[in-house]
Length: 370
Ligand code: NAD
Ligand code: TDX
Image (tube, rainbow, N blue to C red; front, side, top):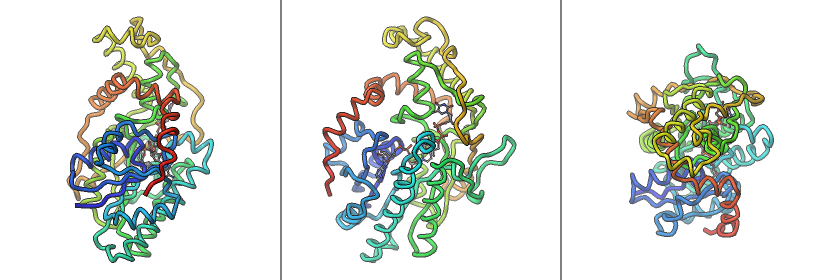
């Protein structure tokens, strides 16, 4: 049994990880630390918090006193560090928040963990999993081989640079202080609870609302899509059985360009409307409600500054060493994800309208509790 700290547990991947961890290891004690930024959502965690199955703490990884108090009180033996500013477009507009959380916040967390584990003589038993991204490796040309764990770092966006800096700090803690840390670099995730600012949910919601589907540049940029459930399985495999000090790449083996992905979303929504006449009255502005294709909404817009052309992950190390492989086919995962957003209309309407933010501010932000 472990005492586990999950940072960023109210974010997209964090929420999915909390549920996956709870289901896989009901004996572990889970503490979630999250600053409840705009990207957080507690709806799916509410029942676990209310039922005492997890402890939720509102607070920042940058708050050294709070983080240290949490380590002292809960004697964590596992840390899954996901808290971050995660959206590339926001990092272009406001890079500072990315340095604060992703770089300085990671340092604060590393230092608290090290101090606490050293003081209690538990360094040998503990593990710190730093969850990072494939974006640290930069951009691939169409014929380049996929990123391996030894691909040199060449981050291009402020987000990628901040994650690269945090990876380097983790590595330095391993080699300098014997920190029992591991790093994962993962490709683009999709699935339930993803914030509507990211490509797949944004396109689903815009299509349902009959708004333009803004494809950056010519839409030939390629991402390697991984269902979030596969990511969570891989993270648990790495923290359990990975070798300390090692990096593991995690990817879906599903390279698709953005134009293809958006086209697939449009076709799947068109198909859902044909099969389910009730959708037309719920989403009257969607072209599919008038028997038109959602593809009519596809719009090519000004490209993202510094837009990486292609990411692709070579995940053989994870498969060979830890026996972990992604299992969700992109077409199946995408269909399930569209179904989720169709069924969870209240969830995304609250997020996009700001109603959820108002609720959070009223109910949670003042509760900084240890
Ligand atoms: P997200 O933006 O959905 O969630 C981030 C969470 O971190 C939010 O709940 C937010 O409130 C919290 N947070 C932000 N600043 C904080 C702070 N200072 N202290 C405490 N909590 C804070 O992000 P996500 O998509 O779930 O990504 C989680 C992690 O996985 C990130 O580290 C990201 O870099 C990495 N990652 C994401 C993807 C992806 O495709 N989404 C792919 C690879 C790696
Ligand atoms: O409106 C859009 N139009 C568009 O063409 C948006 C939001 C995105 N795009 C493009 C940009 C990218 O090529 O779609 C692709 C995916 O974009 P995002 O969803 O913003 O993801 P990306 O920038 O690839 O980064 C994601 O994967 C790696 C996550 O946001 C990161 O946190 C993760 O590290």
